[in-house]
Image (cartoon, rainbow, N blue to C red):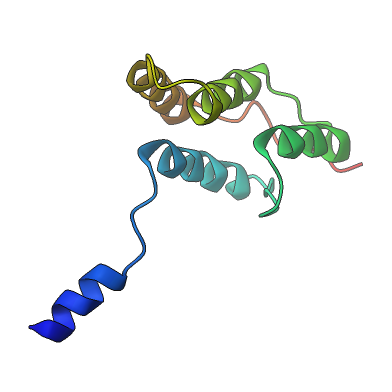
Length: 101
């Protein structure tokens, strides 16, 4: 029993819901060949993605703005923004395939 209790306490905490939602979006983007580097902020990722592939999707900017509001804004109204963020990520579909260059 002690081993199990120690194991439970040593596990890293579950990431916040909004981080799991962002990971879902990153998996969708990875399927079309767009991958975020671990050290990039979401804004840096969008900028690099647009420069390297010329893939521009206004919906992604809206989604990433939601993420930024959740991550850096005060907690007032945060649950509603998380709900909106989740809904937008769930409904997002790529416009077309990115083009290198």
